[in-house]
Image (cartoon, rainbow, N blue to C red):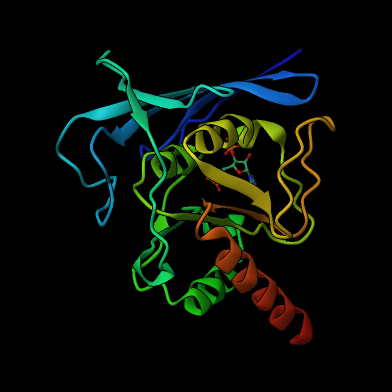
Length: 216
Ligand SMILES: Nc1ncnc2c1ncn2[C@@H]1O[C@H](COP(=O)(O)O)[C@@H](OP(=O)(O)O)[C@H]1O
Ligand SMILES: [Mg+2]
């Protein structure tokens, strides 16, 4: 059994304290505390320009769904990813930090999907929490060449989203494998969305990666 703890502070914006439990390489439990995330949906707004209550705790156990409560201790509410099927109605999350990903690639993918909303840029695994409760439909993560993803940056977020009905895969549609040590061996990047949108997202990702390869 392996316990993963991630503690991440950022520039006063969004950050998460993430805890996951692996049993023989399988995710069984995840807890994601997001002290600066508004308790109500950030859909269509800026999470850092919000006056209401902030502080959310997401927790999931395999097969049991995902729940969210306020960090002040409200009763837990079951959360679900959205049921949006039309990519034109979708919005997507990506890193706040431009150095963490290939922005031209995420904008190409969103263009191919016909997404109209601008990207929602948030630090850390808060993106997984926000997606799990339906604040947006898609999370795109395409680090620059040579970067290797670590399990502690994705384990809690992955179970929080999957238990809320979403899918977390690499760019080829393969679910993340947490059984191989500290690194995730992913093909090109990580994509997250609901079950309805995943086939269209995978197609847009494949086409975008092919265009990128042929332009080199
Ligand atoms: N060049 C890079 N590309 C992608 N991810 C990176 C990166 N450098 C660091 N990271 C990881 O991405 C995490 C933040 O994710 P995000 O980009 O979604 O905010 C960082 O967490 P820490 O800053 O806690 O180490 C770090 O582990
Ligand atoms: Mg880190």
